[in-house]
Image (cartoon, rainbow, N blue to C red; front, side):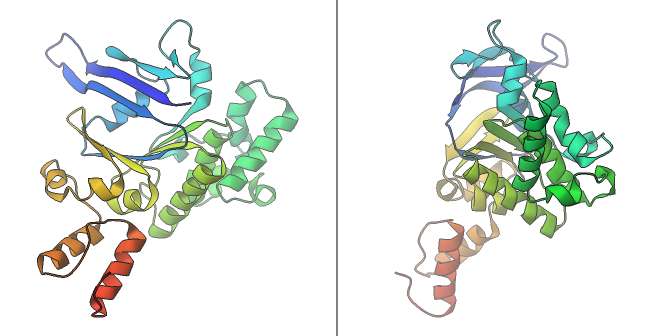
Length: 286
């Protein structure tokens, strides 16, 4: 179920003195099963783009196709679109509202008209997919849990809808390092186990480099780069010029290379560690 975006433009407050072009003629295809990182400085258009992908915003110009159907056409059902494309906003725990964890996660499946047995199954499965024990937590109040647990419950509520595409806008914002690592680990497991297409918006270049297959770099409403992490993070000067950084290992490897060490151009985390270990042990890298 690829998502095809054709000539997407979004203009806020069009034809007023406050007119602002947030997206400027964007075209791209998100293939089934991809894990994509979306990066860009504040105001680059990232949030505006992801809100178009499940119909929360409508294009000023251009089209978005899901299953070869224009999601903004008369033939499309926004309910179906939002079932297929799940969107998790920043601080999603602020949207928790039910008295128990199980009721909160069940809210979406209930609105799909599913029977109680299927709803319970989805609640249990989605909790397990985000690393929480159904029997231990189902009757707990979500408001009595830790920040990381609340975040996982909010994600489970979207996962319970069984989306084919999962979009996450800064899912680790405000979490401590342990909570961040737990959330990202379970997102990666979701991607692998459920063969889910994942689009991750993040300001952490380390997380992006470690997790994703492809990176989309946005700048001033346009797509500046689309490529693998290895290739995108080679463009250190280009990224810095638009207010972005690269993983710390990239800077270290560049410095060592400038000093004459035999280091390849690569940002694969594991390979970089191997290369650096060999350098520091005084071995020639082969």
